[in-house]
Length: 164
Length: 112
Image 1 (tube, rainbow over the protein chains, first blue to last red):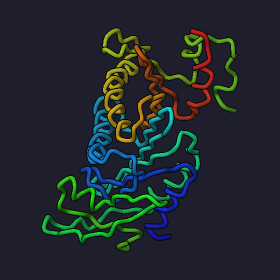
Image 2 (image 1 turned 135 degrees about the horizontal axis):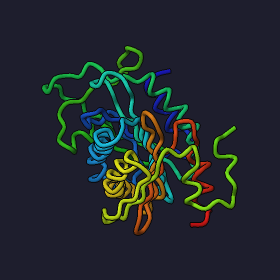
Image 3 (image 1 turned 45 degrees about the horizontal axis):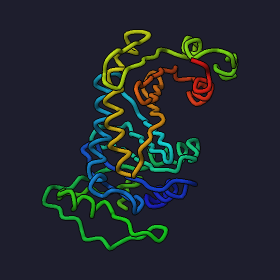
């Protein structure tokens, strides 16, 4: 199963509407959120989620998963536990009726398979990526999101040792 | 068998909070005052609740979401659930073996 298939498996889970993958510095590796998402706030989202992890770890206990249950939607955050510079967080947006057991199973796969490696230097420039659509909606990609937020470097996604 | 299956449906909220599956609880007013906690661990959890209310509000706004019902936090040694209310936020700490959803369904319909 390729990286893209792992990501697709999460996005294809019934009632899942979006996915964000970022590292512990807030650098976005993958982003596919619905069109109604506030793009300015989306850029701040990784740092806000990271702050939640930091605050709970500093004042209470380390934690791996957060579920935010809103009246209409749910947000599910999962943090991988590897070497710190290789760790990442998955943020999944789902409808209120999303099945968390299914979502946990499919994200378990991503927790095991996905690796963020070979971080390039600051001189590295990400290639321009074409506009992508998902279920008929235009989506912003990690590279466009990083560009909007002024990030220059972009890491490669690695799946079982292979660049994807 | 689930630890919370044997809960009597006539139990009040305060009786439910003394259930063996509950490791602790905290109630804190949203202005940060009157923190009432079952023990020191729950009190420490209460200190982060108000911050979580504020930051999750901002996170929800990213997707046009307003009403936060619950926050579930899976920690190393327990699972914590935060239930924001209009004036007060309640936090309940569960042991790792307990499914909070089962308990919360009973807690939310229990009498005060």
